[in-house]
Image (cartoon, rainbow over the protein chains, first blue to last red):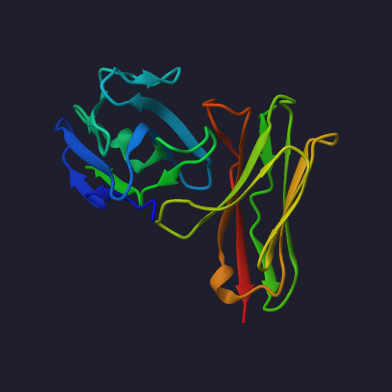
Length: 117
Length: 111
């Protein structure tokens, strides 16, 4: 149980285009989903927290107009990187917190490798 | 100073060795402590969690928390090549507070 999927697993796009990444909780309902970014040899950096049906809460320094997050249902959240630039190339990971669990537990997706050329 | 400090390694050990992975933290409000395992190019997988101080054992894995020293450890007994991964510690103050991650320690178990 507690499986989270991400699609696509890797994507290459040209500078200036937009890319959408999907995060789904497959066997549980997630009231809260998180989006992280991970650079090589660095820790997970929380980008934003999204709650179903409400606007995402972005961490300091994360441009909300560039990284659009939509949490349309209890099993789906999407991250759209708009007008992508090479510096947006990174590993993006989502996680989902089950509605029935305490605050500490979250399950991660397999990640999406974004390369902007 | 980072809220959570973790030696990035890499740590290389022979198969069968006991592995000790550690994190220190500065926020005394942290109550929940987790260890995640992350294989290359994959998302982290929750291994263990501990509330407050004490020990918790699960098979070959033991998690220890010493809140007085702000120090947590993960021990892996009889390490296997399949344990080769990056191990991240994580913690938060409970409820629905933000989880803070360490940078991860890369472990390699050599057959």
